[in-house]
Image 1 (cartoon, rainbow, N blue to C red):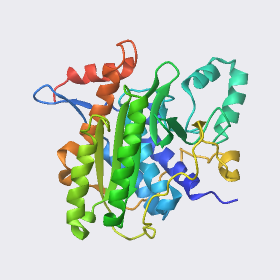
Image 2: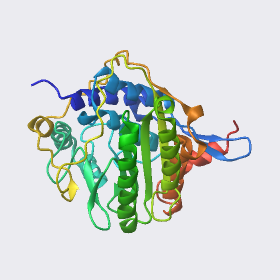
Image 3: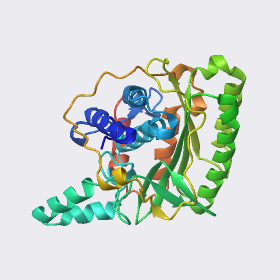
Image 4: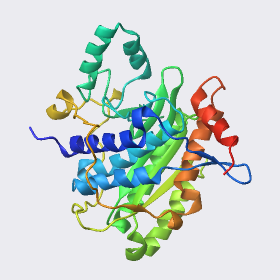
Length: 340
């Protein structure tokens, strides 16, 4: 059976992330500015490559691949910040969701048994009740599928980030997305008040020419989503520029999960997804991808990825004792000792 579009995308995503962090060694994202303020410098080059994957595969919105590129990048940036590989989901390898205690148990096993278990776990996208490709988090009143998560048994959810893409039909889709986001933010924040709660919107830059008034309205409300006491702690805009060459026909709206979500890891119904995980072949080179450019200069300062990631990391470190997330703290200390 031919690989699904999402399976093909994961192969390319994994290769790109592997090249950006060889052998799992991530660069330090923190910079010490001239005034002594620590700044989070995102890896935009890797983001642009990841965003080229859906265009290369001609993946439409219904496939989930365009928004998945944002999820992969955010989880990569959180690992750059120093957070644990198995606590940040999606992971950079199969299974995408693997509870950290399960990972620790596997590592503690005798070598031969460990190799057998690892082969079993990594060969499947999901194992019911243990691993998964996505997860639903219980809010105050209902379960919400969250795209990027950092959690552990000892702490509960520490980072909850929702991502959305909007590449067309802006005037039609924008109001719905803003309304949904307000409700989801309140639902999650009331049950997890200490978690860093964020929202990222990937937006095609042609909105600035096609619907400038909609763009102004959307930027304003997106910023306000990160200012309300019962909404997100920070919001972010990824303004993407790319041409139509090689792109799939634009869908009007990103699909929502079907039906009522069940607690815990998502059970994948598709036989292809649940039986075998895609093979990443990380040793192979990434093909030439369509060019995507992030328009940083046109992104409002209060919606910048740098500010957003800074806020997420800082909130987590501020809500935990100093003997937790020690690598993340050390990375900030190392950067503070350097000058730009």
